[in-house]
Image (cartoon, rainbow, N blue to C red; front, side):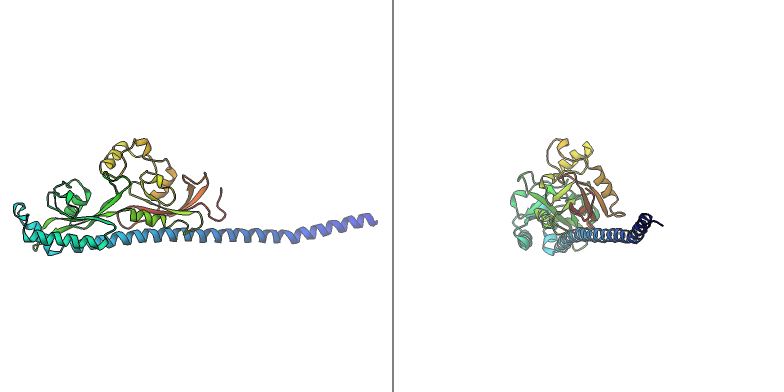
Length: 320
């Protein structure tokens, strides 16, 4: 065999051996990279879901704490004795002084965030209030009056926009007041500064990564608080039915703006929220993410307020 042919054969054998040796190494490297990607992505997903769940738990804890407070406060005997009196004998009575002092004492539990404590009679009339300008107002159409009267249980309202103070957000906690025979003689309610919930959402920013943030939504998927884009607060994920939007505006749950300014249009996010209990983690595009896919972990609240989402624009190996 001539030397050139021998050299060519040797070269081919070397190349063949290299290919045979390198292909498994390349496959192992690809498999290792894939496994690493899966582990990092799964860890990031779990971290995001943990933040969403913890945020939801903290809000649930806050709401439950105040519901328990108002339930216990509603059975204080001085309140029922006052409401038991005929309306014409309440003024300047000893029972009125006791009830007024009781409400003032309760309001001091949180001087910063509690706006007022009040007693409503069975018709929804405000008969005693730590914010005296409210006395005599009709609150019978409010959910925080109707629901505890109907169910006999403590109640937390949806977040409400203040018509008197722009930018102020309120939430009401209420509970039946019963006399010694167990008959409901009125409703105890207190009004709380709901911007505390907004602060809780903003404080979650960055907890699940440098570009992570949280969103709190109500049962209609209206954003109640957004960790990084407050201009989206009180805008629904998708357009609302016009009749529902008008109803929510009348209930102070939406601002008095044209209907096309009350929503965004994110049907994929709505679908994810609808299926959150089955599939709590999704990838989709959100507003303010430069059209990048965001990882979204969804944790429904156990109380009636709504849903909490934790979102990240910086998930490892996420597609752009």
